[in-house]
Length: 256
Image (cartoon, rainbow, N blue to C red; front, side, top):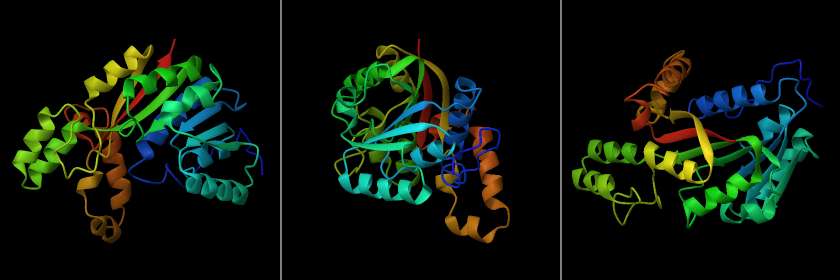
């Protein structure tokens, strides 16, 4: 059923999860500002997989192109889109972030999501340059990336001070050869990469500031614990020093 722009959308995916709700709220506000009449915007989700963000965005009335290297993820996305009756609003394209400029027309996107992808590309700076070419003037980039400083703190608290010290000085933010993450970033490093691509940072938030530290058993056993944790995540997401020790950093930037 087509979305009624006059009705509020309550997606069950990213808005409902304490680990992604802050990102969803930032995006929802930015989209509402860019599309005050509810006509729908053109969104590209690089590395969007099975549509965790793409499907709720389409349900909110936007047109979404998911670019992902995994054919299995794109097949799952297609099934999910069909189940939700969103054919024509979500398209899947096989490819990765480094190929984006050749897969999506230049200057065609109002919003580009790059969530948990910059960590794995060969050249983050080059990839973000391609991202910038895809955005229209006034288009925004939503960039979510692993935070180096969070890894330093996590390894120290886990009883591995040598690994924490390694992550602190390693150019890629890795704590050693057993680290499954290819690279991590600081807030300053992300800002420099985005600026070099010709984009202007508008907002910077911490994501999963404390939620990764709370056992799931507590959330399941304590009435109202999830709601309280989400309220705390909102309060800490933009407040220093808490923002800068979050598991991930979320940056919203605009092409001007």
